[in-house]
Amino acid sequence: MHTLSEQILDRGAILLLANKGEPTRLVGCEAEELDLSDFILNGWVFEDCILRKTKFRGAKLEQAHFISCKGGQADFTSADLTEAHFIACDFNNTPFKGTGLAQAHFIRCKLTGADFTHSRHVDIRFEDCRLNDARLRGIGFVKQTLKSLDLTNADLQGCDFRQVMFEDCSLRDALLDHARFEGADLRGTDIGGVRLEDARRFKGATISRAQAAELLSELGLKVR
Image 1 (cartoon, one colour):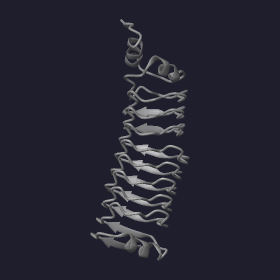
Image 2 (tube, rainbow, N blue to C red):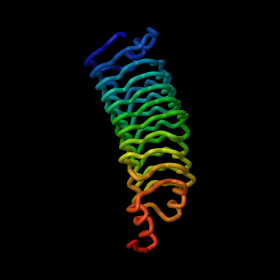
Image 3 (spheres, helix red, strand yellow):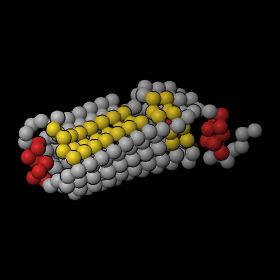
Image 4 (tube, one colour):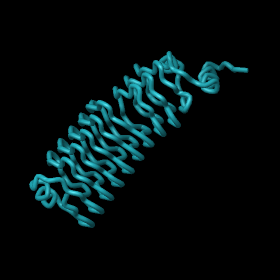
């Protein structure tokens, strides 16, 4: 794999690398605000790169790795990120709308306000990520263990959390219409601010006594 380090790149330079047909590793490079739409970048590695507002719309990024990148407001709309890995990255307010994310992994990432609407997300994985205010509507997490996810104010409508183990997560003030929690273990989760109508969606889930008391307090009832 060819490696390029500490370069400020323009669209033409990346296109030349892409046309070689082999993956490239970019380390400490800047590609801020470039339009890389429809580029074929399968297997590429972006490490410590500046990718703010970079457009990857429709790009081919299968098995790509993004490591410690700063990419706020980048655009992955309709890209193919199958089996891609995002590790310790900041992609806040980034659209992943209509993106192929089968078996993609996000680990220790800031994804505040990210939009995953209509993405193709079979076996997508998140761990230790900030997803507050993110739009994750309809994503399936069946039988996964979700660790250290901040889903405060997130749009989780229609998500499938059946038989999910939550560990140190937050669902505070999240939108939960039509979400499913049968068999889920929510004892390691902040469910504060959940409305009574949303509490019904926890039917079949396991919660703690303290959480039950918190839910009842929404009705003005006291547990003694």
